[in-house]
Image (cartoon, rainbow, N blue to C red; front, side, top):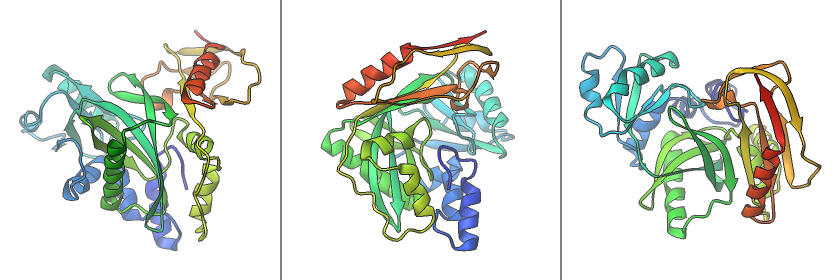
Length: 325
């Protein structure tokens, strides 16, 4: 099993197939880690998603094909994660740089371009086991806007009108079926536009940026334990819960390249501060935040209400001092 990264997903699928283990299939794993294959099955199974084009890096008609889509556009390396090789482009002058970035982060000889759906970005965590979706937990996203939108935090519950929630669940279930995903955690990225959910992409593993912790807090069970038990083929695995604990999380980041000179946490012990984690220590080099792997830590809080959890999150972050020079 894996969590928060696509790196091991194809290997897990291959091993599960070869050894008859409980987990996502090699077929599903390949689709879940290739944005082109994902778009193709979405189109085939009528999952609501953005219009796109596959383009080879050496295609002489490259710009002509890109011109068939409407600006703004998203250029994507198809086999990357952590927002690597993904760029939003608003004008034609930015095409060349976006293509070069996609090429830098892919092992393929092609990339995809899709129309940017203007709307509110949100996501969902879910689990599919023995062909049945066990739960779907929508979450709000805090987003850093660089080359593209990069999630830097999340919060639950994410309040949606009943009809919008029903539409999001329908699109997610259609996408899971289209991709052939089973016996795995699900990480879904959506855009909400005009009351309808568009599927950006879906991973066959739990989300990064504290999303597994968010599921654990909200439902009151250890989500990592559930993922492990599923990988072991536990027949009577239950995801039932009467708990609904609001929580929020945010990455700790640097606004410049440099070396960490000091880390000081002024927070007092608080049962509603679920976790403060530092990925680096004094003396480590860090990068100015642009993509997910540039994180230098995170903070996770909870509360009786979402407002309480979010307020505590901001207070806790203000009491953390990280000096980078």
